[in-house]
Image (cartoon, rainbow, N blue to C red; front, side, top):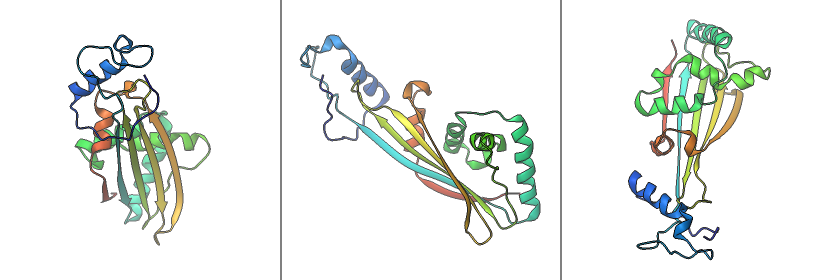
Length: 203
């Protein structure tokens, strides 16, 4: 089979059709040494390609001293008991699909910043009038070709702003997941969700 790809095509195949196409394209018995189709039926198009991107963000507003204090205390407490969680970003993304940001536990947010905390970077401490934004950008790629790109890339950006809206702290983390590492269909569902920006007041 050839390794070069044709022009990217957005597919409209269902899960069963995609699986059948992958099986045909991956089965070496269906192809000659020269890359010609020798399997039964019509030659499949192994150069189809899906690329789906989206961005979902949520901003917490801290309108009172007590709200900021609660956030800071919750972080300090959770840091002591929350370990590193490599899939924390996916947990948030999956939760946003069904329940919204209100259902995301503070411990999960702490887990996202755990690497920075361990590196000596202070957690996002808040004050009255400040805000904290979490941006989840996703890029999903799929192809039935055995050498095609398949996976989900998640870029998480955390931004702290002061009462004037000026950025006090900003960090970005990027993680890549193979589709075989994730529950079937989860990566596609996360990337296919409509882009959305939401805001809530932290209490």
